Image (cartoon, rainbow, N blue to C red; front, side, top):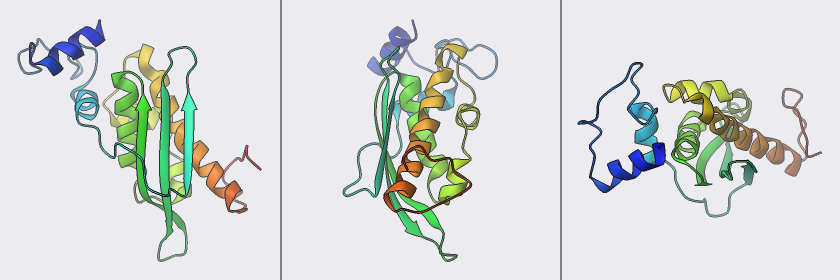
Length: 167
């Protein structure tokens, strides 16, 4: 049902402003206004030219696939930080929204700070997700964590605060 309503909104046959509201700042689609905004106007969409690392995750059950591209720099304290981040996502509106919001949440953070972003943080930043869509926030957090793990592995750096699956 959410796909039908989203398509009606996007086609102009139904307005977000004219639709009846439900509690907790959710629209009839079951999504918050912030989710709908990030779905319809995604931030940092696309790929980066010559990224330092790419994280890619997918969910075989729903078919969502997320790819995060990162460029990493050094801040004034010589810490690695996320200088640029972009995403490409094949999936539902919630998958696109969680991909978009995690790029905003991670941009400018050190890798250790970005590592701390959880699926709960992602969903909370969006004003919540329907329970059936919570796996999307997990995919976004997992894609970021995978990219960070791969960055450390690629650069043969040891970081005891981050569990590594690639070394």
